[in-house]
Length: 121
Image 1 (cartoon, rainbow, N blue to C red):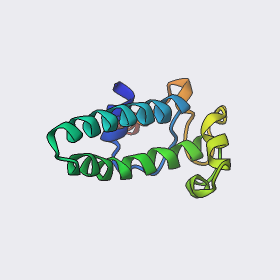
Image 2 (cartoon, rainbow, N blue to C red; image 1 turned 30 degrees about the vertical axis):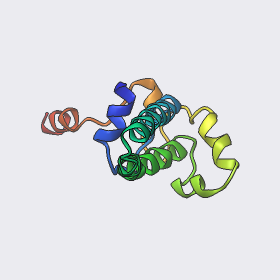
Image 3 (cartoon, rainbow, N blue to C red; image 1 turned 45 degrees about the vertical axis):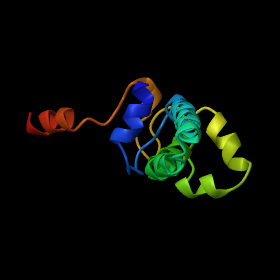
Image 4 (cartoon, helix red, strand yellow; image 1 turned 180 degrees about the vertical axis):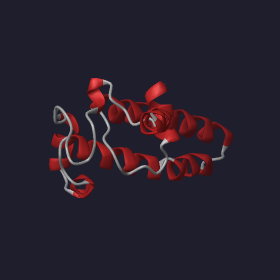
């Protein structure tokens, strides 16, 4: 659940990199929540709630997919290429830093407070 919330906190962040786990856990929780909302909507005859949820998570989904493409060293636009994007979503990210940022798998993450304290010292 922390991966899902982490993506939502970075709602429209298209810069940086996202691990495989971050993308796939967001995808899993989004699918589960969407199915639950659809089932509830069928019983209550309020189907528009599912559509509303899908629209709400569309931008974070595209953003995390673009960051995932960055993790493998490709432009975020590669997400639009059918079938090849699935391959890219499943492979390991580039080890170490690339032109899109530090490796998120090594525990190096961008933290404004850490950066501020580093710059002031």
